[in-house]
Amino acid sequence: MTLSPLDTGIVLLYLVGIFILAQWVSREKAGHTKDAQDYFLASRSLPWWAIGASLISANISAEQIIGMSGSGFALGLAIASYEWMAAITLLVVAKWFLPIFLRNRIYTMPQFLERRFGSRIRTLMAVFWVGLYVFVNLTSVLWLGSLAIAHVSGIDQMTALAGLALFALGYQVYGGLKAVALTDIVQVALLVLGGLLLVGITLSQIGDGDGILAGFERLRSEAPGHFHMILSPENPFYKDLPGLGVLLGGMWVMHFSYWGFNQYIIQRALAAKSIGEAQKGVLFAAALKMVMPIIVVLPGLAAVLLAPDLPRPDAAYPTMMGLLPVGILGIVFAALIAAIVSSLASMTNSISTIFTLDLYNRLPGERSQKQIVRVGRIVSVLAMLVAALTARPLLASFDQGFQFIQDYTGYFTPGIVAIFVLGLFWKRANEAGALAAAGGSFLLSIAIGQLLPALPFIHRVGIVFLLALALGVVVSLLTRPAEGKDFIRTDDVRYATSPVFNVGALGVVAIFVALYAIFW
Image (cartoon, rainbow, N blue to C red; front, side):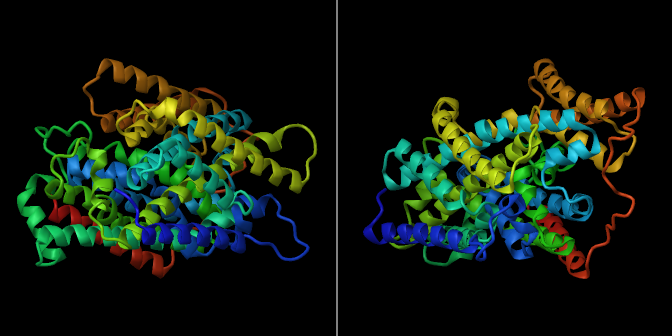
């Protein structure tokens, strides 16, 4: 596959335009210098549309588009559970988690843990998250993103990787979160447009002149096994998505960890101008999540008929791009780059936020706001450099980068959710219980994985979550209460939501139920 001059021009126009826009939206008024709140939380002024768009833009990247299209090719529509269940999770986060975070003016997840439990767990989790984001998330997006770009454009993968890293840095390193969030509405619009164009053209080809709907119906009739949301135990991919266990088990734990307590996701909502704006923004993201399988799963399903002999599932999306006409290919390719650079920018900004505010800023001594922002920018550069240098050694041997992320985060996810659930909703929980739940999650995950190697990954996550939660409760009850350490106010938190949110949430739930009923 090669890009025509027109396609190349469209991509370059996007790169130049989004860079200029990022610098323009993050400019400061004359005489004002960026402080930590400006840089890391966009001055707590984000409107709902920026929050919702930025949540999706930070989430959807190469490992989502390439990986989920590949899974769509291999196992079918069931992989859409990751998207549709995320929509319901976002509604819960908006109604019950955000009111507590915003009432207490939380700016990082480690900060919440310190104000709720104590300083030791803040330091521990800050170091953990920085390491996870650099060596797992950032490396995965860089590697898979560069792989996709190399496949489409024909340029060397390492050149593509270096280009992505440099552009993502230049795009956000000056403006911080504001540069990312206020341009993400453009990124999401391009992502949706590019995705719908790809789906429309591939389904039209399957329909053989009878249109998109005819193509979809032919796809359903000729590949019926790919249109079941609930896999049977006989399905070869049952271990990846174990039937009703997906809807009733550990995937909820993974979603709450990612959407509720993951800094580079939740940071957008923490930067809202008000709780109402934050909740509307999260509702907007939930609505977009219901649409995402059309963009990230259907191309893989289309490849079942259009390219049945693919050498590997992850080649499905790039192969479908090869069917696009001149001009449209440039738009879809620009959309793919938009998804990658937005995620990279979001991750580096959150890495710098946690390192600067949760580690550097707590060191002895005074430091100015200018120094804090400067350190944040330096950390962004260093994080990207480390990820670029380690991406190949860490990921070259993995067939699926998405699985790489799940494998490593799955050991810690149950404990993270357990300590936040205890911290948010049970005042008797203390730091000893939280540390026991966090450490126990890792050890229990290893132990259960060794004892029951055939146990589906999602079941293991659910079981470990319940055990870690129980461990946190028992240790908390056996040790002294957290007197003088709990500074999180929940007594005056209002969980009531606006009529707009309630109606929108009801609509999302209704669509969710209907989709599972249709594609059961």
